[in-house]
Image (cartoon, rainbow, N blue to C red; front, side, top):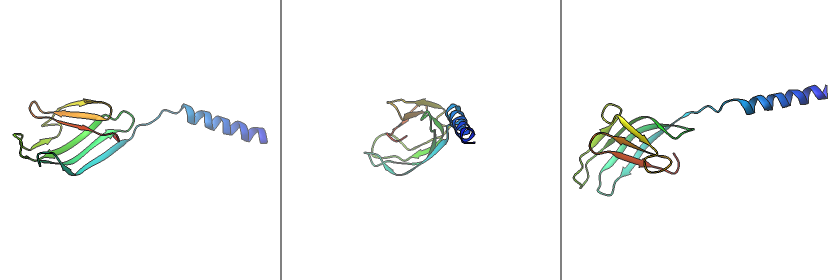
Length: 107
């Protein structure tokens, strides 16, 4: 009986070790984000937990003292995403005009 328990435990550990790692989605909310020029950013985005790639986004910025106006960044207004734009855990949302580039050590 003791051998059967040990054999069953080894089989369970082997099955767990060979199971594929499943990514999950991490949802982020931007709150209290203020740029150097006084403009702000708010909204949400989601990333893949295993790759860090952005999978969905809806971010709005407001105008500050610079020449850039506020803009909404979602898949219809900023259809081009560049993952790892300025290093690991970063992405850029491109609009054909002004773009937003977010970087974090915790993404």
